[in-house]
Image 1: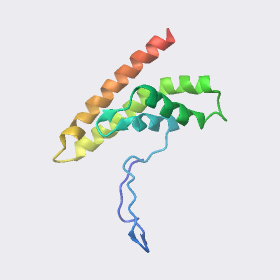
Image 2: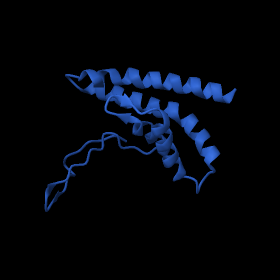
Image 3: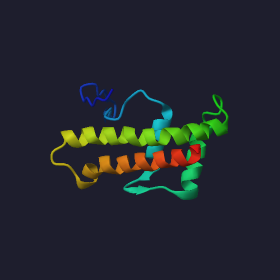
Image 4: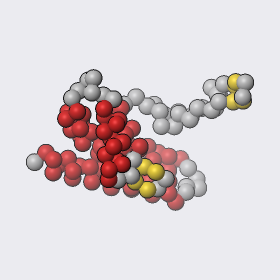
Length: 125
C-alpha cells in the first residue's frame, strides 16, 4: 500500500497539513529499524547503532525476550534492506530526472541485503 495524495490534506488553523504516504505500508515493525541507522548519506555504525537498536528492540520485550528479539532483528535486517531496494526501485522508475543519490539507492540497498544474508549465514552456522 503506497500512495501519495494531496486531496486528503486537511486545512487547519495554521494552514494545510500534508501527509506523505509514499512509504506507507503494513509490515513487520522491524522493517523500519534499518532506516533509523541512516543519517543523510552516511550510515550510523558502532556503539550508537547498537544503542539505537537495543532501545528499539526493548519496546518489544512484552512479546519476546531480548535474545529472541535480537535474533529476529538479525533475520529481519536483510528483509528490511530488500524492502528499501524495492521501494527505491519503484521511485527511480517513476522519477525523471532522477537525483544521483536516488538513482544509486536500489543498488545500495541490494548490497545491504547481501551483507545481511552473509551475516545471517555466519550466525546460523
